[in-house]
Amino acid sequence: MTAVSKPATVHDVAALAGVSAQTVSRHLSGYEGIRPKTRAKVEAALEKLDYRPNRAAQVLRTRRSRRIGVVIHEMFAFGPAGLLRGATRRAREDGYTLTIVGVDGEDDAAVTAAFDAFEEEQAAGVMAVTLTDSVRVTVEKRMPSVPILVDPAEAGGEGSSFNATGAALAAHHLAELGHRRVAMLGGPDHWLPARQRRQGFLAAVEGGAAECVRVWEGDWSAEIGDRVARELDPADGITAIFCANDAGAIGLMHGLQARGVRVPEDISVVGFDCAPEAAFASPPLTTVDAHYEEQGRAAIQSLLDRIENRVATPAPATAPALIVRGSTAPPPGRSSAPSVGTTSKENS
Image (tube, rainbow, N blue to C red; front, side, top):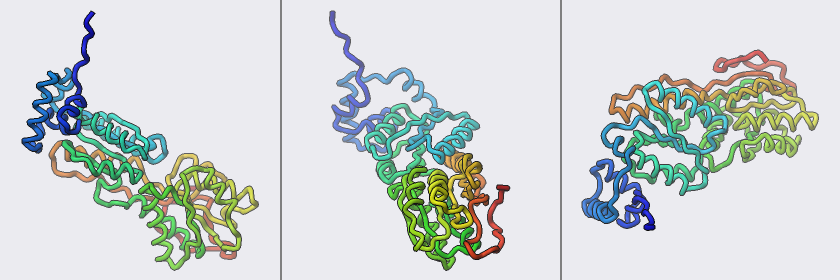
């Protein structure tokens, strides 16, 4: 019995023509910005392989797709998960659905493959949540045939506003309480949000006439917070610590209390994320609410404006807010502090 050969794919055509699968997908979707010589090679390969688009692709060529591709690293982490919730709900309001691909933040090939798949399926647009430098560089190398949003935090042109501004709120709060020798437990240095939070916090500490005595690089886990607490040197005179995420802050408080260090009487602790469990820590954690769902909504709003070729309709900006709870207080020896006028307060 004669074996039935498999139909040629976009990748088969690309290999024969000596071009990328992305270029073949652009040609098939009618993209005009391809060099004549390249276009001729693609057409020759299509003819030789007797390439036939599948039925779904034929439908997509006759009417616009209502799907948006999303490339995301650590999709189950608190921040990215919140972004996805907001993005999904906003897309649904305009009749779009999201196709979400989770990738390893250090796997360039996986990111490239995800974009190739989105283009082959003719997604209307792509949002890339670029948490690591590796993902960001790979995404920025793309020559998009559809609108691409590189980073939700930049949808409104504010760049590091959510991360840096939120971290600055924590620094201002500690300064107003009277803390002058503080420290920070950050995130991984190759994560853009971690660097933005560190830069925002350090700049605000310096501007507030305080000193950041130590900065530890973390990994977003509670375990690293616990370990930092056990390494803390009382001789440094640190009276407050800002953590770049709530898990690290909760681990830090656990480690401090295991050493007999009271929070907040001896050391104040501030987190970042406003994760639900932060309100139930002991003591309840003061934390920065970055409004991740609102970020996701604003990102998809920006992308939809570009997909629909309409005048941009910026989503209402939701500034980060500091939720003041029981883990912060004036430093030892100072019984009161100025009131904090830019923070939200919860009963602890």
